[in-house]
Image (cartoon, rainbow, N blue to C red):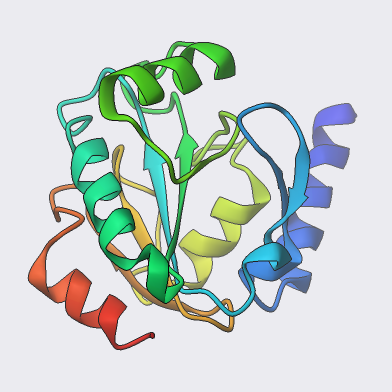
Length: 174
């Protein structure tokens, strides 16, 4: 019964959402935040993992963030353990890894599920609303969001954060 209520809540929440600003998430320290705090800023939302072949992308994500943060860019990392158990750590362990290994300064959120029956309502919205619909395929998929909370594009894991197409689209949002 509890599972059914949870699924119905996720369905209701995602159907009512008009933008990503309608969602609340927990940051890496467990504090609840509303994504409405990002209104007026372009966003790059990325599901991340510390033991993945794409983990090195943390470095490029941080470089892109440093390059564009003065113009308003926000990057939000969502650790997820959905693919090959490549994010097994606790939020505390993930935060420590990101800081020590890649000196991540962009926003990191608490670990969530980005696919399957326990998928977070934000990712339900993202995967059903993006121009390329469907489940997230792997770690380090990227969703580019405009200043109004609308999805501009979705990029596969293999697309580097500093990819020319991605950065041109990003630059058009400032």
